Length: 276
Image 1 (tube, rainbow, N blue to C red):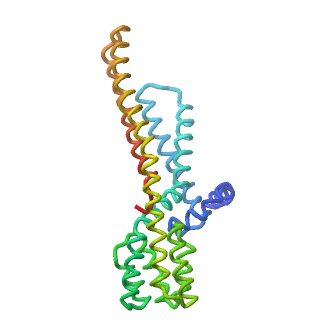
Image 2: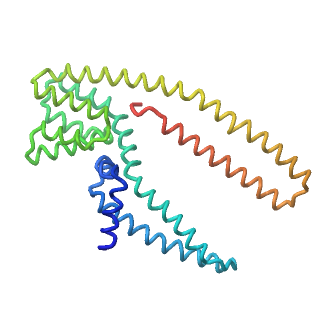
Image 3: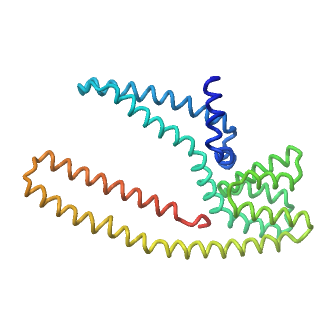
């Protein structure tokens, strides 16, 4: 445990972004604790992978057992990196969930303020309204207020721990309005207008980016596979390759196209506007 802790303290210097990503991902651990846990999981994964590969090599009659350690090391290294970057991935998902539900939540706050409902009751209502991560954030703020913090302090703490720029900007507007004694309905209305404009801009940019992506998909996902299949059929016919080898070639090509389709869908999903 001490060895892992010392190594984790050293590795933490190479991943300075991890502390902030852990905070934004909602993982209640510091960098050293998270890396220590990741190292422990990696060692277990390395041992398990080595044992499985040794058994596989034994049954296949392959005696180059040194290769097993090399393969296990590289697989475990990527396993380690996956866990290191996992908080960043979770933070990105949180940002999308927050920004997707932010506009409906602000519109609800605006309606409730105009109805004369007290702010604390509005915060409680939003926490129970089912607005995804936005409701979760307001739930934490309500709990902090019930524990004795002022509304402004609870909202400020929520802003500090939040990864979304749009969410932080909207809550800061509310905080500044509360501090200055301004009419919150006007402040929130302006924030909603700005977010609506930003949403429209994001949709327009997304549409502009989809055009070249669609052309790229037509080329790589439809035209190139069709031509490649014709070429493979001619190649197999001329070279007179065995039937099993031909099946393997077609299967490999099918797997490649399938992976490309999944990758392309992932690209589209990543580029999707966060406010939509």
